[in-house]
Length: 199
Ligand SMILES: [Zn+2]
Image (cartoon, rainbow, N blue to C red; front, side, top):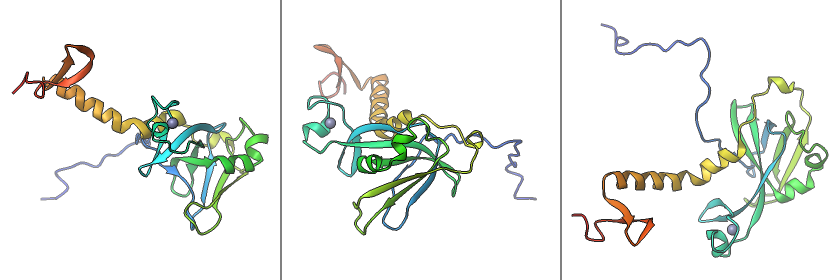
């Protein structure tokens, strides 16, 4: 009869919260500025390396940090939880060290950034041209803005999800008996097949 019989319309009294775990990181391009409303009270700064076309957090020492071990530059970046009103999404805005230092409002309004409009502009034609940050007051009442999300947790999800996925794959392999603790070194997992225990 009707091709609608198979499914049903999911009416709802209110919208469901956005459960997408990944907030995209926004940086300006040469032809598009970032214009967003700041939700965080302050910038969260972190030292990172950029290599293999990815930004990775610096883990401190040559022994623990792959980027330091490979002698890649270590740079400071600041991140803020922001609201992109144009598309109605929550995002992470990335501020370079130079943009941060050259924008007086990051210092005069420190801890009080929520509700300000942040504009990030890439000056010049190069992809790596200098970024300028401009903070301006906004007409929005702070209490009508969405709450800030946890910037640290959002960054860790971006950086470490791949590692976690590998860890889960290892756990599943251990459950299937394909890998297990090395009797000589119980903290290390090893492939049983490779050691001749399986097959
Ligand atoms: Zn490092």
